[in-house]
Length: 281
Image 1 (cartoon, one colour):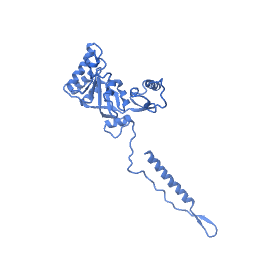
Image 2 (cartoon, rainbow, N blue to C red):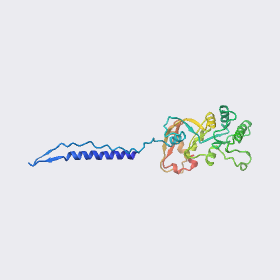
Image 3 (spheres, helix red, strand yellow):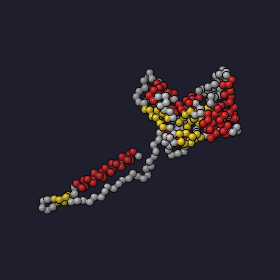
Image 4 (cartoon, rainbow, N blue to C red):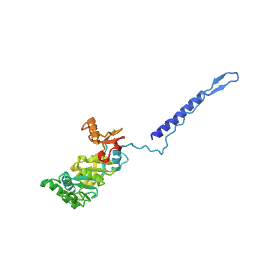
């Protein structure tokens, strides 16, 4: 559309210039050696409109595009409150029992989750403790997975021999990526504040609480406010003595620990392709 606007201005400029040349050259010669200026009636230049087939689209950031798709809308803007369809819900052994409790309380003891293949459950916090109450958290997950026939449950059953646990994938954020749950253009919510690191894969991902997660279990939807976007462009060569963590710590130092509250951070520039996926995550 920018190019079309520039073309329209260029064509109009030619028309105006042509009008001036015509008026300046309208002179009548007389037979006595003199000449006189003859007024010339010139119609106004015809307006050249942009083609009617060109549709002006709402510019959006990548986050806004993902949210608009999930909300089944043509476009969204920061501040909009929208219902989005959730592609993945992740919970673990810390918040999982609470999320399950909210789900059963609000939707009924016999309720079924919205999609058993869109729920990912990963015990990874309490699995190394002998505390009975902590172990009970993991048992609640196991019972729920069996009851709901959840497809993606990365459990550990033998803590003494990791090789005897083919389903265990380690820390939930690593497991999500390695098992293919962090897909570009999708929406993932997780009951963990570090869920947002899945943004490295082009996915809109963020942490939520047990109440929101319980609602998603029952409906597959969540009401969210479209966040504003902060874009950080990093150019130049990445020195060997710097790590990706140094970059984000510098950004935090610049904007402050609350400088991006309820905002999306978008990273771009020459430095990003130099980082491995592990560093970007």
